[in-house]
Amino acid sequence: MNYKVDKTIDCTGLSCPLPSVKTTLALEHMEVGQVIEVLTDDPVSKRDLPVWAQSTGNELLGIEEDNKVIKIYLRKAE
Image (cartoon, rainbow, N blue to C red; front, top):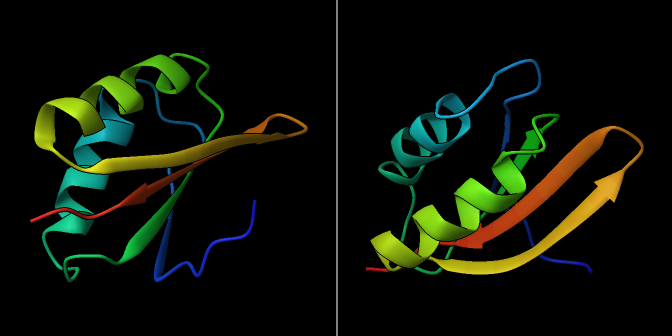
């Protein structure tokens, strides 16, 4: 999956709910339609961030795993 990533945040070493919290804070400074890449090594984030995205109206674009790093792509909604 290739997305035009507007911002990347590194949440490796953090466990939930911190990746969701950091994602929320980062999205506050982004424009509608922009894409954020969340890097995490917490396997719980693969479940929690999609649920968070659905509950906040943001769009989950995809999840990739690269060795131990999980890359979660989200598009900011209104």
